[in-house]
Image (tube, helix red, strand yellow):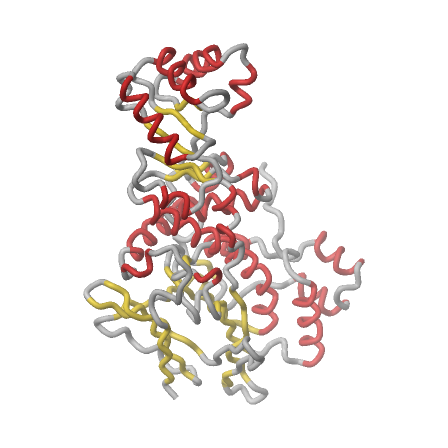
Length: 442
């Protein structure tokens, strides 16, 4: 019998529970509240962001339970008092979560996730939601930029050794949703249905008495369609040895060092001269979106990206925040609330978001704000509604988790990326590709 999945309840900051403890004492824990997860600005001067992580968050919410071990730790560390421990033992999320689908684009102010429930239900999800979506969306945004730079050439994610072991799995998932075609991470393949790839490292060549012995053994094991790593010693002699061993039907060669535009051109010329015109060239070696763009005119067939994609290409967090935007007062009436701190202003009220389009191209992110809780406005003919229900009355909607959820998110991203205006595809730092337009109903 398989073991139960570990609880996700302590993947949080202590102050979430101390606030809960105090709210249970003063009677505000049961007040209905609305929290929004959003960003005030796009990190790193990016022109758009990509929402990823929601499916993972839903699965973690399913396992968000305070069991015996979690309660014992809280009791032993005196994090909360006895009545709060009793409350947490029975804690279940019974509220509603809506938001942007995975793979969707977002801009400043976009209500990426909206959590409605009692304060006691919603506040304890803050750290977990931010932990998941901040990292996954940062990786996905970087991956989308790399995918745009690569054009039709395939991309493989191979950054597991540059991230924490679970972050590596999450990064592979995010990159795949945003346009990468494969990962080197086997757990990501098993968990999310992502195609896996990989052949041999330099240690394989160094293990053998000669480069030729290494290549021959690899071809014997993996077949002629394998990719041989040709830069352990001298690249030119590596190409010659590869074709001598495998013949002109060799599937591919990989280059992991050197001035890639120059080296790729030299290798292509050498392969063609040897008759291996169909042998593909894959390049790796610390690529990011800028290096990929610089290789656009080079005879490269595929890219492998490691460090840059799993670290968000210099922007390791999406800068998302989770803020209370509406609550009930003591009389049960709804009150919009907002933070007014300098440079950290939030906007209170319930929000409905639309992507306004002109002949299929996005022109604005329109966010309608209601102080009260009126029926959500309908989208105009020139706009696309952006929010969907993930959890209703505590029940997680089907279709967003697991491998099928990843496949759906990848397809959705490919569709909505076609809506971006041309200026969104540039890699330089700039303002968001489309403006955020706020519409107040009251």
